[in-house]
Image (cartoon, rainbow, N blue to C red; front, side, top):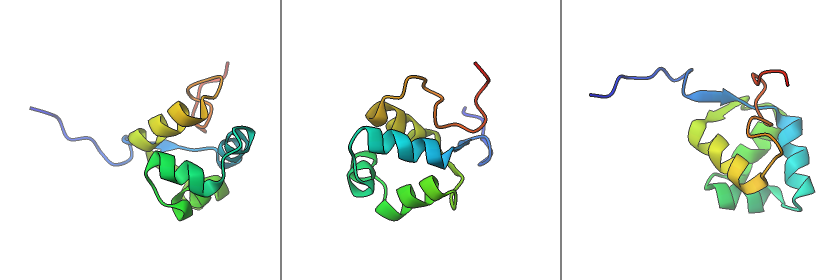
Length: 82
């Protein structure tokens, strides 16, 4: 039996400017990234601008897989200091 998880624990705090820079470095538009992740263009824009400061674990995993940052926690605002 699976234990229920709270919504807060299933969400990851995102650093929007870092996400935007990674997207631009990969040469992707907001629409292209949104399409690859499977979310709306508006949602990616909200993440980048900080209007939606958290995303699901699934969306975060997709962003990491697509944008391939040096660190898997690159977009997280709660990441541990290196």
